[in-house]
Amino acid sequence: MNYTFKYTNAATVYALSSNVTGIPSLFPPQLDDSQIFDISFSSSSLSLDAHDSVSVEVGFTLRDGVDESLIPIYSGSIQIQSSAPGDGTVLQVPYMGVAANMTAQQLFDVAEGFPIFRSENPLDDRDITSDGAIFTMNLTTLDIPAVIIRLLLPTRVLLVDILPPDPTDSNATVFAGLETIG
Image (cartoon, rainbow, N blue to C red):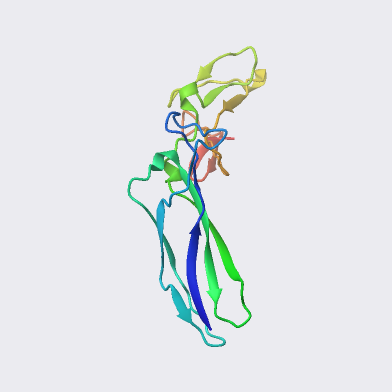
Protein backbone atom coordinates (compact mmCIF):
# COMPACT_ATOMS: atom_id res chain seq x y z
CA MET A 1 0.00 0.00 0.00
CA ASN A 2 1.35 3.42 -0.94
CA TYR A 3 0.68 6.62 1.00
CA THR A 4 1.32 10.22 -0.03
CA PHE A 5 1.43 13.26 2.23
CA LYS A 6 0.38 16.82 1.38
CA TYR A 7 -0.89 19.78 3.34
CA THR A 8 -3.41 22.57 3.02
CA ASN A 9 -2.82 25.95 4.59
CA ALA A 10 -5.71 27.78 6.25
CA ALA A 11 -5.66 31.50 6.94
CA THR A 12 -3.48 32.95 9.68
CA VAL A 13 -5.07 35.23 12.27
CA TYR A 14 -2.98 37.84 14.08
CA ALA A 15 -4.06 38.07 17.72
CA LEU A 16 -2.57 41.54 18.19
CA SER A 17 -2.87 44.65 16.09
CA SER A 18 0.24 46.61 15.14
CA ASN A 19 -1.28 49.84 16.52
CA VAL A 20 -2.28 48.42 19.93
CA THR A 21 0.34 47.60 22.54
CA GLY A 22 -0.05 44.21 24.15
CA ILE A 23 -3.85 44.07 24.27
CA PRO A 24 -5.56 41.41 22.13
CA SER A 25 -8.23 42.69 19.77
CA LEU A 26 -11.84 41.77 20.38
CA PHE A 27 -11.98 40.69 16.75
CA PRO A 28 -8.87 39.56 14.88
CA PRO A 29 -7.23 42.67 13.42
CA GLN A 30 -5.85 40.94 10.36
CA LEU A 31 -6.52 37.79 8.39
CA ASP A 32 -3.60 36.61 6.26
CA ASP A 33 -4.17 33.94 3.61
CA SER A 34 -0.50 33.73 2.65
CA GLN A 35 1.56 30.88 4.03
CA ILE A 36 3.72 32.18 6.89
CA PHE A 37 5.61 28.91 7.36
CA ASP A 38 7.08 26.03 5.41
CA ILE A 39 6.09 22.43 6.12
CA SER A 40 8.50 19.60 5.48
CA PHE A 41 7.87 15.85 5.65
CA SER A 42 10.59 13.31 6.41
CA SER A 43 9.07 11.44 3.45
CA SER A 44 6.43 12.76 1.03
CA SER A 45 5.37 9.21 0.16
CA LEU A 46 5.99 5.69 1.43
CA SER A 47 5.07 2.07 0.80
CA LEU A 48 3.97 -0.30 3.55
CA ASP A 49 3.29 -4.01 3.64
CA ALA A 50 0.64 -5.51 5.92
CA HIS A 51 1.52 -5.10 9.63
CA ASP A 52 4.35 -2.62 8.87
CA SER A 53 4.57 0.70 10.63
CA VAL A 54 6.61 3.79 9.89
CA SER A 55 6.91 7.18 11.56
CA VAL A 56 6.74 10.31 9.43
CA GLU A 57 8.07 13.52 10.93
CA VAL A 58 6.49 16.84 10.02
CA GLY A 59 8.45 20.06 10.53
CA PHE A 60 7.10 23.62 10.63
CA THR A 61 9.51 26.49 9.89
CA LEU A 62 8.44 30.12 10.16
CA ARG A 63 9.28 32.14 7.05
CA ASP A 64 11.51 35.21 7.27
CA GLY A 65 9.77 38.53 7.82
CA VAL A 66 6.85 37.24 9.89
CA ASP A 67 6.12 39.67 12.74
CA GLU A 68 5.97 37.40 15.79
CA SER A 69 5.03 40.34 18.04
CA LEU A 70 1.51 40.24 16.51
CA ILE A 71 1.13 36.60 17.71
CA PRO A 72 0.19 34.85 14.45
CA ILE A 73 -2.11 31.86 14.92
CA TYR A 74 -1.98 29.50 11.95
CA SER A 75 -3.78 26.31 11.01
CA GLY A 76 -4.46 23.86 8.23
CA SER A 77 -4.49 20.13 7.65
CA ILE A 78 -2.16 17.36 6.53
CA GLN A 79 -3.71 15.03 3.97
CA ILE A 80 -2.82 11.35 3.82
CA GLN A 81 -3.92 9.56 0.65
CA SER A 82 -3.67 5.79 0.31
CA SER A 83 -3.51 3.76 -2.89
CA ALA A 84 -5.94 1.15 -1.57
CA PRO A 85 -8.57 0.13 -4.14
CA GLY A 86 -11.87 1.77 -3.37
CA ASP A 87 -10.28 4.18 -0.89
CA GLY A 88 -11.32 7.41 -2.53
CA THR A 89 -11.16 9.49 0.66
CA VAL A 90 -8.29 11.47 2.09
CA LEU A 91 -7.49 11.36 5.79
CA GLN A 92 -7.11 14.93 7.04
CA VAL A 93 -5.18 15.60 10.22
CA PRO A 94 -5.74 19.18 11.42
CA TYR A 95 -2.93 21.26 12.89
CA MET A 96 -2.83 24.60 14.62
CA GLY A 97 0.03 26.61 16.05
CA VAL A 98 1.10 29.92 17.50
CA ALA A 99 4.17 31.44 15.85
CA ALA A 100 5.35 33.39 18.89
CA ASN A 101 7.11 32.72 22.16
CA MET A 102 4.13 32.94 24.52
CA THR A 103 6.37 32.79 27.62
CA ALA A 104 7.84 36.16 26.58
CA GLN A 105 4.45 37.89 26.21
CA GLN A 106 3.37 40.49 28.74
CA LEU A 107 0.69 38.95 30.94
CA PHE A 108 -0.41 41.79 33.25
CA ASP A 109 -1.88 45.10 32.14
CA VAL A 110 0.91 47.14 33.73
CA ALA A 111 0.03 50.24 31.66
CA GLU A 112 -3.10 50.60 33.80
CA GLY A 113 -1.22 49.96 37.08
CA PHE A 114 -1.94 46.26 37.52
CA PRO A 115 -1.27 44.14 39.49
CA ILE A 116 -2.48 46.02 42.56
CA PHE A 117 -1.80 44.78 46.07
CA ARG A 118 -4.06 46.35 48.65
CA SER A 119 -6.17 45.79 51.72
CA GLU A 120 -9.65 44.37 51.28
CA ASN A 121 -10.82 46.75 54.01
CA PRO A 122 -12.97 49.39 52.20
CA LEU A 123 -11.75 52.08 54.64
CA ASP A 124 -8.13 51.48 53.61
CA ASP A 125 -7.33 52.81 50.14
CA ARG A 126 -3.60 52.01 50.15
CA ASP A 127 -2.33 50.53 46.89
CA ILE A 128 1.11 48.98 46.75
CA THR A 129 2.25 48.69 43.15
CA SER A 130 6.05 48.77 43.33
CA ASP A 131 8.20 45.66 43.61
CA GLY A 132 9.68 45.02 47.02
CA ALA A 133 7.18 47.25 48.84
CA ILE A 134 6.32 46.38 52.45
CA PHE A 135 2.64 46.29 53.33
CA THR A 136 1.81 45.84 57.03
CA MET A 137 -1.62 44.40 57.75
CA ASN A 138 -3.66 43.70 60.86
CA LEU A 139 -5.81 40.56 60.60
CA THR A 140 -7.80 41.42 63.75
CA THR A 141 -9.38 44.42 61.96
CA LEU A 142 -10.28 42.47 58.82
CA ASP A 143 -7.23 43.93 57.10
CA ILE A 144 -7.01 41.08 54.55
CA PRO A 145 -4.66 41.32 51.58
CA ALA A 146 -6.12 41.38 48.08
CA VAL A 147 -4.31 41.11 44.77
CA ILE A 148 -6.17 42.73 41.87
CA ILE A 149 -4.99 41.81 38.38
CA ARG A 150 -6.03 42.40 34.80
CA LEU A 151 -4.67 39.94 32.28
CA LEU A 152 -3.85 40.95 28.72
CA LEU A 153 -3.71 37.36 27.47
CA PRO A 154 -5.44 34.25 28.80
CA THR A 155 -3.53 31.82 30.97
CA ARG A 156 -4.45 28.40 32.32
CA VAL A 157 -2.26 28.75 35.40
CA LEU A 158 -1.48 31.81 37.49
CA LEU A 159 0.52 31.59 40.70
CA VAL A 160 0.97 34.64 42.90
CA ASP A 161 3.32 34.29 45.87
CA ILE A 162 3.06 36.81 48.71
CA LEU A 163 6.31 36.64 50.61
CA PRO A 164 6.81 37.83 54.19
CA PRO A 165 9.22 40.77 54.61
CA ASP A 166 11.23 38.66 57.06
CA PRO A 167 12.08 35.23 55.61
CA THR A 168 12.71 33.89 59.11
CA ASP A 169 9.10 34.66 60.11
CA SER A 170 7.71 31.63 61.94
CA ASN A 171 4.24 32.22 60.42
CA ALA A 172 5.53 31.59 56.88
CA THR A 173 4.48 28.47 54.97
CA VAL A 174 6.99 26.75 52.69
CA PHE A 175 5.60 26.24 49.20
CA ALA A 176 7.75 25.31 46.17
CA GLY A 177 10.85 26.24 48.13
CA LEU A 178 9.59 29.74 49.05
CA GLU A 179 8.42 30.88 52.46
CA THR A 180 5.03 32.41 51.66
CA ILE A 181 2.26 33.94 53.71
CA GLY A 182 -0.66 31.52 53.99
